[in-house]
Length: 322
Image 1: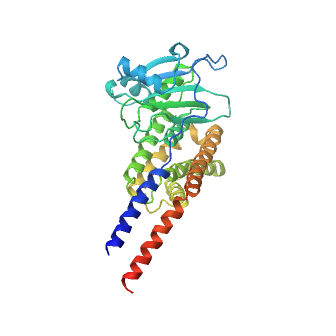
Image 2 (image 1 turned 45 degrees about the horizontal axis):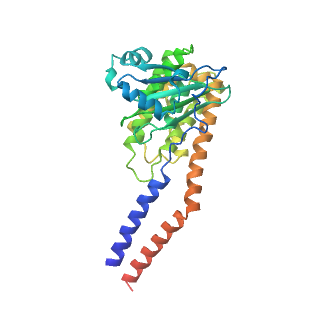
Image 3 (image 1 turned 30 degrees about the vertical axis):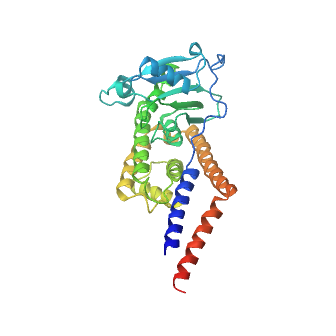
């Protein structure tokens, strides 16, 4: 019995290690954003930093984002007034605006690419959630780096992205920005509520959100009209089932997704070919990340070691009764 208990504890430890090993890393952009020179085609990258930062923290954030020459970036704070302006919300406290972004436009067709440079500090929002929401808002073909000097949830970074585009003469549609913010908050809250559930994978929720958007657009194109509430619930439930989330996402959470997508399909995102192109790219990115993690686990022999532990436990249990 003592041997069995030791084995069980060993397996628990191995599973804990495996979970940490297989947790989706938030990687930096392949080439980052070069601030050593001025890109004559796209101009200076835009550094939108949290208005709640001190001068020393702004400098620290710039270093975290790899800004080597501040003269080669356009920089400005993101304030509570910006949150009110872009999201049509009540006045917000600027001191709580901490997370910051560095944004650079790229060639058409390159899509939206987001990296979180400080994953230990941005505790809830994932790069894929930022990307998904940015696409909803109307952001096209951009490299976006997100960082924070202190632990934050990360929601205010999206406002920084809006302000960066606005500052460069690309005004995003108000209703799409508002829906994008609601999307970020809704999907993140559902992910957080299920975070402790064994087997729940937030990347599958990201994939389901992408599929729901694509299915709503397909239905609109085929029928020439928006989905009914019944259509939307069917599409949501099918997407959750396709990514094995039906046993995790509750009816209350489905209702929140329904409320979100009722608003989503009222925006121009539903008819946008650019949105569909970028969602397809994002879907491929998420799939590739999951495949890479599985391959890493297999190459490290982690799966085999876990399997061997369980076989030893079974043998130990069997021997107790022999």
